[in-house]
Length: 473
Image 1 (cartoon, rainbow, N blue to C red):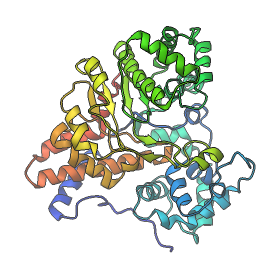
Image 2: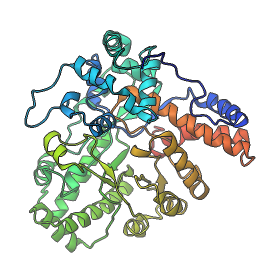
Image 3: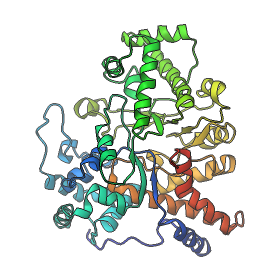
Image 4: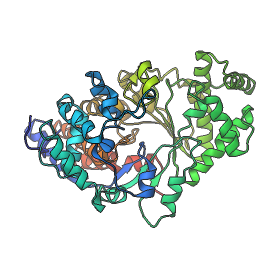
């Protein structure tokens, strides 16, 4: 179905006229605040080399697991979407054909946040004025392809145009950070920093764990065949990342399990993992111990710690074998926090100089576990609604279920957690609108004065993330 592409100025605001008017006023005070993007997965190479983005298919479709999972669920082979398989790596369609497939199925995204983000990008970033469909696919493809050749569509120009004050990418400990070094050595003023994601060297079930640990030792000159040398190597890489602007770590563990074993038990467990003799239970215990070790190191070096647990990753074994990670087959799982975090909290929960930001894919834990924990322990803060819940309804549920117990100031505002660079302003705009809608309800119910709501709206949009991730310097 064709038609004009229009973004309604009151989208996501309450339907009640009085609350809607309040939301409009609140939003007007935060709409143009700078963007703080403290956690995400954009490619630092874009900003280091500042070359034109490729064709529309490579930019929008191939790397976006939100899009891939929906299309795959409707029987569309990943190969037709430009994803190379291990058994036929060269069998990738032409970009225009990939785009046509996507456009012909764009209706599948009705009512999803992906649709809202993409419509925003097409309209506000690229100036497209008609709705994407099979009928308009070629016209819109051509318009985008031409637009991508303009100098103002290069990564650094867009970074400045979007009003991004700071953007964090995410790299593994073995990364040499060459692109971050190139950015720092350039004459461009944009602030792009890294975040330390140690999963490949702290998860015994991560593919290539043993070789990764060996490489860690080679990079640091430490004997990573020993527990002491292994920890020293991790601390060294954290220092290296901090020298390249890093202010946070990120841990994508299957669960929030933590442990606090004595040194002898740690040595035995580490040796078992390194020899690839660990059971699943051993691996889970080791990951739990490493969360506690990472908290100890954060207390020493000041890096903010993020825990992103609860994703059953690569659930579709066939897709993982043929196409690898991040193909849309990660599924939320139940997550325990009260008991799982107890060993870490017993040791560090009252430290005034440590910040641990908790995320969840298990919404049932919001009011039962996460809000009470963050509402008590000084080290804990709640990350925003994440991944499957990074949506209008998910964000609103998050506010309703956490605010009464944790308040606003035990949360860290918003982060976009995206690989899709052009969608960053769309995601922040959505979050700001939802927060203003929530606050408008409190004002309309006379639970909060409007001047206070304005202050909270600015904190949620800008100040809390900047403060929590230590980005003031």
